[in-house]
Image (cartoon, rainbow, N blue to C red; front, top):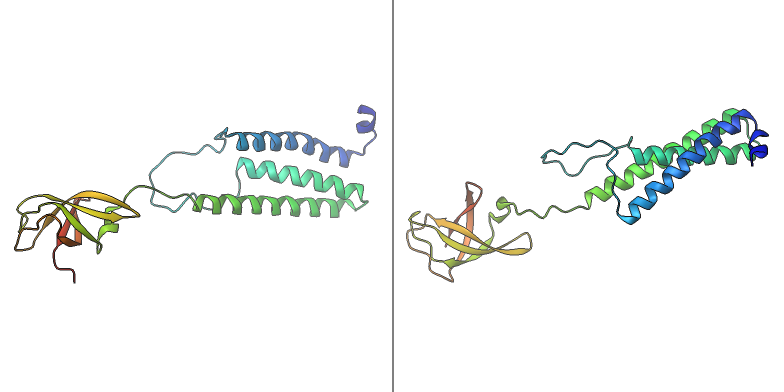
Length: 190
């Protein structure tokens, strides 16, 4: 094996120096991904944002591993096919960048598929529900309303500005949200 490696030209040896460690790293990343071992090599910081996903991340550990793996093996294949040094470099860099772009695009769209299951009270505005516990008229006291928000039924505290009390079973419409946890409802469904 060493005789074979020593017989290679320096240019091809350089590609092999990239191919072996990057392929091993690729296999490790692949194995940990499928076995559920998630290693945070990117150095992410936890923070609350209203953004839709992480955005398009081109330079990450996984993308670099993919780049060097494809770059090196493409370069070795091009060298073996007898291409010039310039063509080998150009083709291997382009193939590596294509791999990085494909991986970044794949991870971008995968993060867009993640659904946030937390209930947003503003999604209740305009929806109809049913009074579960009586609600006193003119903001006279809290009651409860059963309402479907984001695909599930919730029992939420509610008040009304209507002139009459809202009894159990009355169908109501949500006019607004108070303090992000109390619904303002009305019997008028218009």
